[in-house]
Length: 226
Image (tube, rainbow, N blue to C red; front, side, top):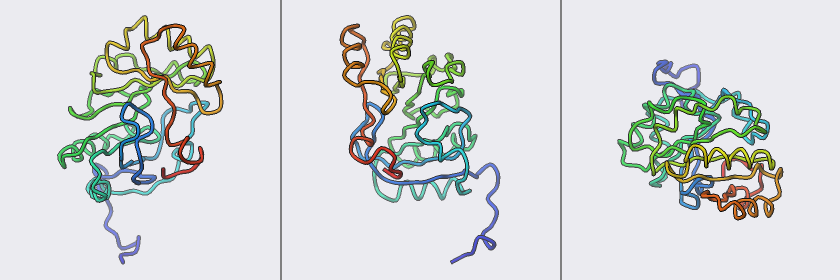
């Protein structure tokens, strides 16, 4: 085995900082329940109050794009998702996505909505957050990203309160979000009553999907690698 000291340095334009790569089931989109390999990159430009992946803010291992592609494809699972942290904070994320597409995979990217998604390769399915007020990051929503979404993509809004729900409801109505792509209303884990949230959506006849994080139902909520 080659020691770290003997490994050749990875060129900057081929280098990614990777937290983990693992197979599981998709848990946070209209693709929920399907087998999926997750590639989780390190680092994030936001600090949402309810973040459940703070472990990605630091650390990770530098790996080449081709090495990541090989490991992600090895399980033989069609769907591969790039996540984080904020994966699009890595400029090398874009060629990584393209190379996964070139291998014939269904490719998803989960992003905060604070970084321009225009460079995401055609064919990648975007799961994009819009940050509600209780996240502490609502001012970072890059609304021009809506112009780059289509029916294969998803908009996800995490809500932690009635105030967040009303913000999401008004954004859906005022901006016609449901006419762009499916919209998911996802409760911040443990912070909003699930029955109440479901009732608000039904009462308002909101054209959005009530959406739980499937992996937190199947496994312990703080378990990694699932």
